[in-house]
Image (cartoon, rainbow over all chains, first blue to last red; front, side, top):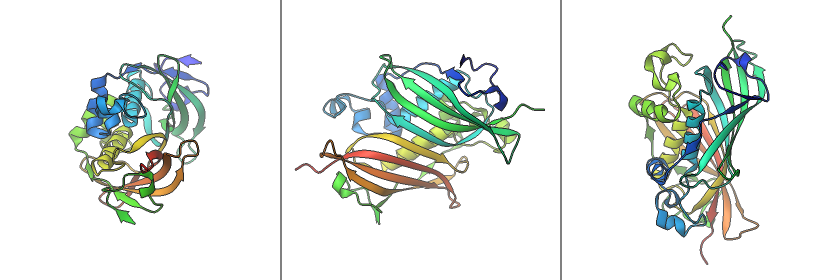
Length: 153
Length: 153
């Protein structure tokens, strides 16, 4: 079921199948180049001319940038509501190139929940986020498990 | 074998067991807060006072920030030498908190190589990067497979 992040705060509030929409993400050519200069200065991310003659035939966003921007879009929508106590593992899949001014839609689905055995004041919630471009292509997925506080007694 | 990134350029240059050292990474409190304000505004990353009363007992770097900073440290050391043609999957593990002014050492090891069956001008190289703090604790691992061009004939 599609839900707003508002009011989804504690471990008990998450149910398998719940879906949360992030804020849409659009990266300009300047955004892509600025981020990549600092963190991923490969020519396909920072040099539009060199990128044209690459297998990607044009500038594409760095995967590190995509991850940060998508996570930012989720956070701006209120995802986790500041009740996260850390995530231990993440799996990122990069399926299609993301180009300047693509509009990315982010949908995060709860795939599993489990109370912590060692700490019953916390539980694990597993998510799969699907990131689509304006053409409906799946460009990226994100799988992760987050530790979230249970409702205070 | 520990190698410099210099001269390691084409698929054939990578051998299982090769290790590449990234540039060390140090994140100041300001770096951590600035990045998290843009991409991961959870209180444990942006609010030193709130972070003190959290389970982490102080400000810690965002995982998205760590990934970007570590990747940057690898790139600044010359990793991939601009011959990468993309990576399709990455697995990140966050094992211990990273705090302001920790010095992170990054060691990336080749775990597997395989020529592409469909495109013999490219091959897959699998890496495992281990990120340690100044106390020798493993704080993060990064596993990924990168497509790299073969030496031009």
